Length: 244
Image 1: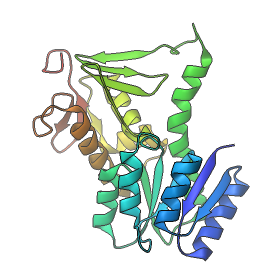
Image 2: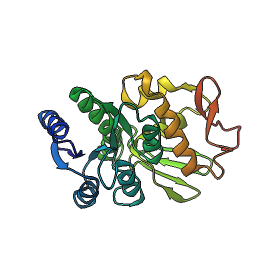
Image 3: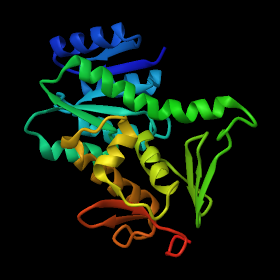
Image 4: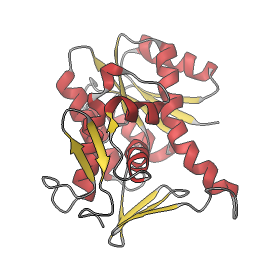
């Protein structure tokens, strides 16, 4: 049973989210402020954190930044909750490493759907690893120059050095790297990540790509791996380009 940590200072919202997630089969923990949420995440290592950005004291952006900086929680998925007009905070949260976001007021059913979608990104790779030797795809390795994606273990290395990616960043990179040269629209990449396209969230793809470039590229201003196709979307460099 996956454990979800909800960090939310409004009791009504926290309890509503808890009830819906518990009904959906998750074990749920609550924290009422940022410091308590950070302490609980480090102590309990939840499978996913639902994190409000507008927290008293240590706010959600600070919590995200600290979770991503700690190797023990660097890959824990985060779904942010934001006020409707906090567009800058949404983008900053995604750039800090959050996997998805919902704006308040939100549908509890939508929250459950987003949590399940983010966890599926982790489950896909975990299922490959659990399949054991000889299972189709269980030992898949994707290589592009000095970049290596170990699919069953959700690990990425560049020139032999491990690169810490969030589940969403890994899944996005994998979708692109499996088909080098193919152009993906933002909507298609959202389909690949969630299974359902949410047009209003296409800017989230740009934030994930920015994070990937910051972590993977020697010079993010001149990317070698994830390339922009202006006016369309993104593609992974093929063998004839610099990533070869």
